[in-house]
Image (tube, rainbow, N blue to C red; front, top):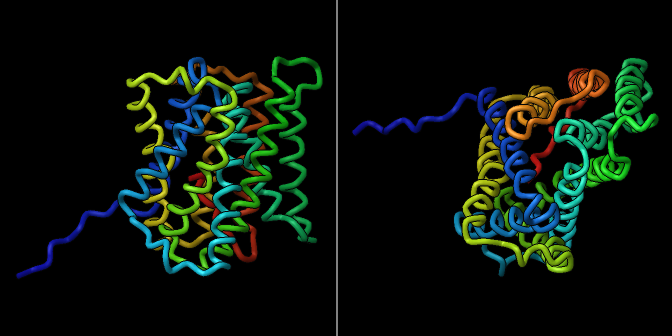
Length: 290
């Protein structure tokens, strides 16, 4: 009896679908902000994602060492902080601008310590992009939102470092599942504190479920599949398209229209991110925003 072939999405389309999924999820999240606020929406996403991952992965928690518990706890707390800060950012600024600014974190991580002339070009392009976005002349962008997006990028860089460390200590699915539990510990108190979680309606659970699937479960599965088939450098270059997809998603679903300067800034940061990935000696893939 012949083995049935399991259909698998090719690597490049899988990454592109993952990006579309993440940014579609972000658009859904921003649509919930007027009712629940950024922190409670983040809580809804993280907690439901944790439950979905627990249901499907069912990790064995009893055989973890003390070192593994410490590593996965820090990983999860960073993941939770990254998500809640990013949602607080895009509540104040356009989705595409928030995603572009957040990419500065992984970009800085990729370039830190480099002394090659070509890498200074990527730094200059990213710096010009930030300068164009920054609200120097009261151009309508919220300064707090800009700073929060940059902080989310710093958490993303930390998340990549911690993810690389923990990938050597345990299975990726297990790490992400347990990490999401610790992420819930971060977002729950903040959501309860702002009081808007009490506005949660039963119908919002469906939106929350779609958010959890689009922003975590689906893209994580697609990205893990793609990483087994393509080099990390190719993966990183493709992920650099996220700000562009965010701009399109924001335009279609949220009616967010960027100014010429903002479009140029997003384009410069995309070029800087893709260029850094292309010229990196040893590319580290941009970790999924689970």
